[in-house]
Image 1 (cartoon, rainbow, N blue to C red):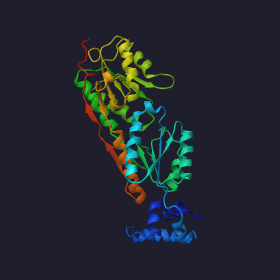
Image 2: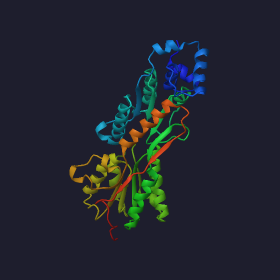
Image 3: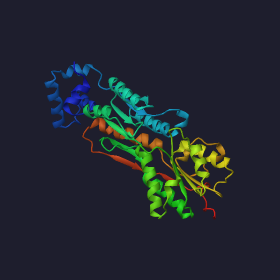
Amino acid sequence: MANLQDIATKAGVSKVTVSKVINNYESVSTATREKVHRALREMNVLASDLKRSKDSSMMIGMLMPLGDMTGNRFSMGILAGAEEKALEKDYFILIGNTVSMEREMKVTAKMLQRDVDGLILLSVSGELDGRHLEELINKRVPVVLVDQTFKDFPAHVVRGDNFAAAIKLIDHLVELGHCRIACITLNPVRSTHADRVKGYRIGLMNSEIKGQDLYYKIVGNGVNSYEATRSLLSMDSPPTALFVAQPSMLMNVFKAVQDQGLRVPEDISIVAFDEQYAILPEEYRGFFTSINQSAKLIGSIAIEILCQQMNDTSLEYQEIILPGVMNVRNSTGPAPSV
């Protein structure tokens, strides 16, 4: 027999809306009510049968690459904010730790089998095999993306303003007289990292600083952030400042600088994203100039929008962009004289 999701898909509404119709909630419009009743008739289902079934799983699926959870504090912050807000609304979070595209597709399918009411998604890649996402669209499963965007996937989004934040960090370094500014980043296939690299490049262009490709290092494919930093510092004209695009790399970058006998900020300045989520010795907490974003707020707002969407699948598209907070600290200073 057809279930709640089948009727919702047929009617073009959410499961929550179907549940409200069959339970005679007055908040549902006449037009939407008629859509649901038409779907019931066409699928030869009695509303009374659905009333006896489970109206909602009261579960929200959350898919994200957690990896080593102690080293992925930003994702854990998103999860914490989402869980807190979901509990407020009587929902529980079902977590899927996605470490590959294959696993992400499998976990998405498993969550749909368990009848989750909606999904929060932080995908492992920016180069998606979108088959599982197309299925979410076709089944009208409510979805909210966090910390990323996809050009061809029409889902609500909650993210930080990575592009503008990167420009702010570069402007700060330029104001201090730096013109050899290196960028150490993960492969920018995800929109988050791509926006940070774009902001780095635009910030330099705005200040008419050229020839920066020599100072651009991608971490991954066998190259770690420590090795990337050592390579930069061994150049004939080494950078006087480092732009660290990911908090997980900050400690290795700093260690490489120390191992070269350099002082921060006297010999070299360092700026970073989300220093508050980096794993650092206690004495270096609050030391680095950084743009800090609230992962917990991203997760909380994502659940809020998801719940709105579960109640109204025609909810107008929303992209919530949260500005980060610039904290100028002790890791930046005037460019050393050459």
